[in-house]
Structure formats: structure tokens, C-alpha cells
Picture 1 (spheres, rainbow, N blue to C red):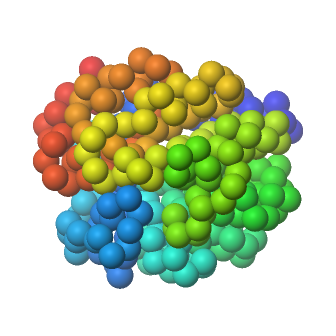
Picture 2: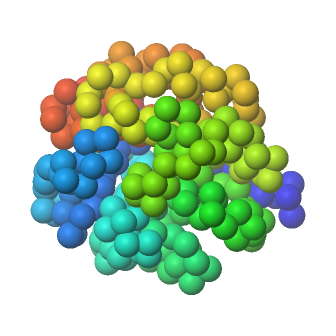
Length: 259
């Protein structure tokens, strides 16, 4: 069974990296597409009131994968925006990784039933390790994306509202030993500021845990940032505000996808 799971995961990683190194993010609050700055819910900008419309725009230029975040759910501690997930999943062919408030067996089942290909989990992996590890065993490593949100080098949870004393490098390595292969890491200090990605942080993670497929998140401002992240060994890069603010245009994204 483990061999089968690993084969599935390898195929998944290769196929996504081949066409979707760039993974656009849609963050949802009150059913709308928004972006926060440094995880601050008080620094919210609404970019579109119809997330499906945004998702279709990404699909139309050849994007294969979407990072969909239920910020209401992350703050509340339970998934809120199932209907948005269902709508995007049923009306596009995007591979959706969905996170925000997934904290119970019932929640993760509902997320998959609502159309998510991958469940993104962060807080549970910190506070309920055994539950998270049971999901890795039950669904396979390719169906779980571990989120490591950091301030400094410590892990933050619950929609970035709580910073722990857990070192991110130890956190990643502990999870790797339990079979976790796919990880995205957001440097909260960089998120939404359009000042470049945390290249040094990602280099350290890749050096310490080279077996993990690392996706960068936060701070990406230009195609040069994407090139640099790919060069250091990241398997993908989540991009949000740079797209919505026009720093990276849809035309540029399309060229990047096709290269």
C-alpha cells in the first residue's frame, strides 16, 4: 500500500511541477476573493466578489492548480466556505488544494466530498499530531499538503493568530519522518508586502529536509522571484497579491507556464 501511495505521489509531483510551478491563491472571506497583509484580518483588500470568476481566469491561461484558502474557517476553527469550494470544483478542472479550519475527520471528508483534490492542514499538525498522521496514512501523502506558516523561524497556527515556540525546521523534519512529502511554507513577515520571497529560509528547509517537496508562499513579486525559487529547488510557488496588484500579469503568467 505504501509503495502504491508513493508512486501516486511521485506522479502527482512531477505532473504539477511540469505545468504548474506557479500556484495562484484565492483567499476567501465572506464569500469574496481577498488578500491580507502579514496575516492581519484588519488589513483586508477585496479584489473580486466572485471567486469562481477569478478561478476561471486562471484556468483559461493554462493554470492547472489553485490554492484555495478559507480565511473565515481558519479564524473560526472550522470550515466555513464549502459552497465556494464546490462551485469552483464543479465548474473548473483545476486541481484544488483547500485549507482553513480542517480540524476533524468529518471536516476532511467533507472537503474531499466538496471537490478538493488536496487538503491543506496546518494547525492540526501542530496541536493534534496523531490525528494528522492518521490522515496521511488513510488518504496517502499526495492528498495532504502540510502548511508551515512562520514568524521568524517559529510555526504560527490558527489563521496566523497564534505563534508557537516550535522551530519550523524541527517541525518539517518530524513530519517528514511520518511520511509527509508535500509542504508549503509562508513567511508571514513577507506575506502581502511584495518585497520578495524568503529565499534563505527556503534554502535552509531544503537543505535540512531535501526529501520534502517544498512550495514557497509569500512575498513573490516578479517572474525573477519565481525563477530564483525554482533555481534553489522549490517545487512550486504560491502567488497571490502580485497577480491581483498587476505586478505579475496574466500574460506574463501564461508565458511562464508555457516555457
